[in-house]
Image (cartoon, rainbow, N blue to C red; front, side):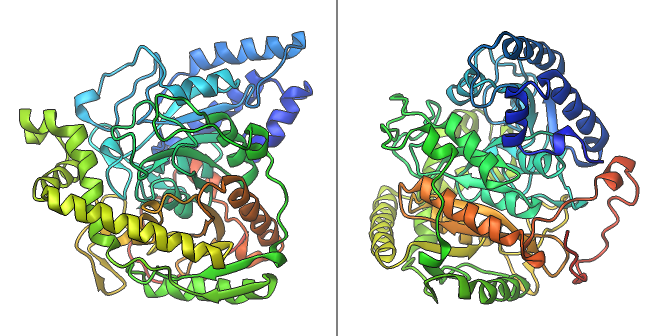
Length: 497
């Protein structure tokens, strides 16, 4: 089932620019793929195919006239259903907004259109992006492209699955506690959490917080970097945004990195995060192979003492800011995850918040000292293998009891609270035959370097079969046969492609 939509975004943009592929032809191919496999996955929700085809025809005419073309010219892009899109239904995964159609694009969507992107679809997300599983009361659950009975994680799960099945070449996402990285891990794609402020947002509820960011997703690092270069902006409406020393070109095409020159730290759990035994084994095996390529690789956990409570308290302030009017009108307007986070926030005091922010500052400064001795930090991107998609979150993990979805997110939210850039890249399969993602964390503000280091690893992985990016069975998805029959999570014999 190889077709135009299976090509990388970078290659498609080259072919469009050299008049070898028409944007209309490409979009029709993407629509055909969506129609073939999305019924089994539910990754794409609202669509604007007619408007997209009209925009694609205009893009084709620009190519034929020899007009100046933007970096995303003619490329179909999926937008996470938390971003406002003019004329295209935007629900935020909430029944309160089931029929909401914005009049205007928010900044990041407008920037993508200005760069030439064709906005054709929204991708599924949990209500208001809250939760580790892409499940809501508007559209239902999104299934994993490798087994639609299983979760694709959250909250950018629809984008990750759309990419895994090559429904679209590029998609947007967002990340507070791991929502770009965790779905990418379980879908065998790339999700990049940029340094806060690199991708400006005029809609962030708490402008000076480092927790919530928007970022790009792609099937490889080069595609992800290309999308980031169009998303990035120093828009002054976002107080975290700032003029960049490196321009869009530096983000789109990072300078090559020599892996053998790097000092690398590895950590299985950041010293605190629950991690399933099978994930520990896979990570250890992968790192044993990589140890020989770096100038130095050594295990070391950064000082994260107190991060669990600090993250929970600080995160809850965002819910108090965003959902007070709905909760005070009627708590039942909010889903269980959103309501639970809001009510947890009500239990904290101003003294709790002050203590949490002081702890965050201490952790941040310890992280800066850590990066004086290391160029990169490598971690798993998920604590466990995918669980059934009908579960809001797992209650146990290979015999380890869990109390909520936060329990499986420490490996990613521990990085979020520091404000450092982090990327998830595909790294073969886990013991259950599901995608395994490697998290690469770079120094604060070093987004181009982090992308370049990840790209160098990605190139190495292509020569190592057990590290290669896995691909879902598209023919099986299109046939919609044998789906939803996963009865147990017994380890499978790993298969690589």
